Image (cartoon, rainbow, N blue to C red):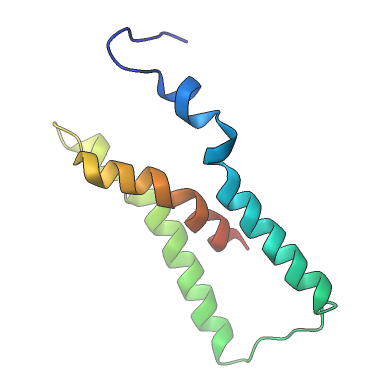
Length: 98
């Protein structure tokens, strides 16, 4: 993997670090805890099932397509927006998978 001497390597310094992956892990632990404690007998109301499905599909699509501007715009996306995306997409993606 080529390294850049001017800026830090994103994969080595940020992506691989375990504290960047703690939020999806914690969400999975919380989900497992709830499933075990309810003994898998919890049922969602028929009214809330389509709403929950729409919310999770929307979250998943936002996680996928919100970074698209970085690929089509010449200067890329705003740095603040990129930092917010890198911070929030892992927990949002794990919530949408549950």
